[in-house]
Image (cartoon, rainbow, N blue to C red; front, side, top):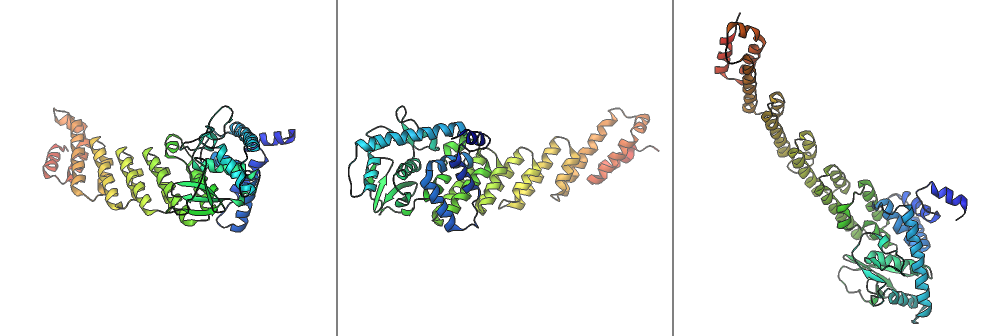
Length: 405
């Protein structure tokens, strides 16, 4: 990279032109775009550098903030070390097969075989753990990540369109012309009879990676709601199989919403629930959010959530009752009256006015004289007003007995 380019990319979020091309592609995606043109462009990007797609989308849309520019540069350098190490291995350990493509794939399974100890499978959440210097560290990743690395290394020799994605429930493998490649243990396999399995174009790995974020990562990291929503939306746009991606998208929504509720972040949870258009999720967030806000005595917020709950009217009534009781116990009787009026419960409102009566009476003191009563003429007037609103004849009579002309 020349000096001008280095200066230019210093002031952008991208490490280089490859990231910029990927960034512009994803930024320009829309449900209304030409699908054939989108797939063609995605295939070009996959062929050029699938690793850039994976790292950039993890950073930009999945909240993996440790993947800052300097870290991504380091990981790209590690990727080159992996590629060079594999090339050296391939030159010395070729086992000819029926085609050059299968010979390469066999070499990849040999290179990543558990027997060599260069790679180990582990359920993880970031491509970065896989991109390490193979001379000093073990490569660690799950099925999505190791499949992505296989595709990258394959792309250095042949067209990635040769490959397909074998998508199974909770798992993904590679496929080449009738042969499945189990990348997690470096073996050839036959998943054709596996229940729920499908063969999809190789670019499906992009939507799979976009939707893959482990519960352990999400439970310990703040991920911007709009970023994860965009990742899910992009996966939906790019996927070939609406059934799979819709199911994955719904699962991603449910998982994230539950985690946000666990953090008591009901506002974000509700935003996601609305975006999912899942009435069940919306109702759960509405109910739980209302209960949570009532327990915090944030009753207006509770009613905003309650509007989305299945038992809307019951929850809203409960919020007014809780608010009234809260203010009553705090001796804020006027606020309690406002709340109880929403219940149309005359008895509770009258009880508040009685409490106001006694609150005013306490201002008179314990020893009453004509002079002291005259000084509290306004207090006596309020007492009579509260007694009347309370509908308490005894208190009205008592107030009248204090009136001094």
